[in-house]
Amino acid sequence: MSVPRVAVVGGGLTGLAAAWHLRGDAEVTLYEAGRRLGGQVHTIELSDGPLDVGADAVLARQAAGPALLDALGFAAEERVHPTSSRVQLWIGAALRPLPEATVFGVPTDLRAVVASRVLSPADLAVIASEPLRPRRVVAGDRSVADLVGERFGHRVVARLVEPLLGGVYAGAAKRLSAQATLPPVWAAAAEHRSLLRGLAAHRARTAADDRPVFVTVRGGLGRVVDRLAADLGEAVRTATPVRALSQDDRGVALHLDAGTEVVDAVVLAVPAAVAAGLLATQRPAVARELAGIRAASVGVVALAYDRGDAAAAPAGSGVLVPRDQGRLTKAITIGAGKWPHLAARERFVLRASVGRIDDDRALALDDDRLLEQVDAEVRRCLGLRAPARERVVVRWPDALPQYDVGHHARLDRIHHLLGQGPPGVHLGGAGLDGVGLAARAADAARLAEGVRRQLHARAEATP
Ligand SMILES: Cc1cc2nc3c(=O)[nH]c(=O)nc-3n(C[C@H](O)[C@H](O)[C@H](O)COP(=O)(O)OP(=O)(O)OC[C@H]3O[C@@H](n4cnc5c(N)ncnc54)[C@H](O)[C@@H]3O)c2cc1C
Image (cartoon, rainbow, N blue to C red; front, side, top):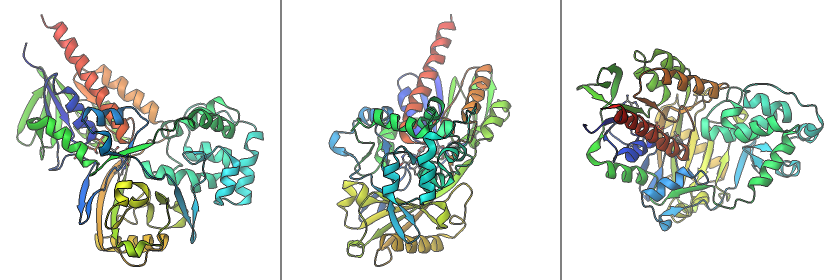
């Protein structure tokens, strides 16, 4: 029997890792629309060294992330863990500590919230009374704002939860699914009469885990992409967008600018809207569901200051800016405060994030204005004495998927509908099941396993 052919569409982490897993099982080709591999993993060179301007950290406690680094041969000395996880909130003119002992901003301990001085006495009274109030049991998914706001008040959502969720989804709490974006909170709300007490129990179970939460690699996460690409070699075709898919007697046909190629299986590791377009005629019902997954555009502004100008900068890994503060900057990751390898750099480097699903003020500016305004905000926030010596903006259009209320039910429908058609299409990517590199690494392994099962079934069926 001939060697099976597999196409992987999309050269972000999901596609690269899926192709990498499959390279010994089939003749694999990876098609990437752009000239650069890595998708939302992108390391640029500043004058004093590399800086990640997409993802900068892998969740170390989700096994698939570190497992991929192991498999690619990253030695312990090449890996770096954050020096500090101390995050502050920029509210009014002051920086206040994000309360400790929260689960994604949702309080588990009233004293910690009091100590942070982020909320008013009236807000604190709502939290204090939460265990005493009757529970409202609601079947089905709910928005983060609805679930958390009902128990702790809308200021907890606006000041604590949404700023943290903003880093991952750039989304609005009133539309994000509690089930999909805050699973421990969702589970505690279902299981416990009091969310405060339920989450305190969750924290007590997880607090003993003293492993670092995040990991990155010296030189930037672009090195992960480079190693995957090096192992894939000739299998990678950049600047080769796939325009459409169709079913053929021989398998799945990929329509490229230069013609059509037929394969036994195709892995779609592209944003949900792109997958919807590719499947529009072949699997219209699946495509309609995928088209319903919205995405937020964001931007990263990399700034490098003279060390002397940053002498008064606060300690800690970063700053979050609640939306009600009206700033362009949504978050600041202080390179030197977060990562030991960046602390050793000649310049004081940091990244400021802009853009939310329903706030495109920053991204509507041209690059010069955006850089000027964000630099000014960052200086004011961190007390830096002079403008950045080096400034770069990287725009990420439609990058962060929105897991809106009902996302899990939508995923169930997608998988059900996909299973009803002929085998051959394997759907993955951050739009479906997990924003973040560790989730992407897990998805890649799952996709590869699904393809192997399909190829195995075909081999069994062939006389
Ligand atoms: C600014 C930013 C910061 C982030 N920070 C973190 C972080 O610190 N930690 C973390 O874990 N996660 C972070 N994330 C999220 C994480 O980077 C993404 O979830 C992950 O990289 C998505 O990988 P992917 O392969 O699914 O998709 P992508 O990286 O979007 O890759 C999809 C690829 O498909 C290609 N493509 C599109 N259409 C076609 C086509 N028709 N044919 C062929 N190719 C096509 C695209 O060019 C792209 O290369 C961040 C994301 C952003 C934007």
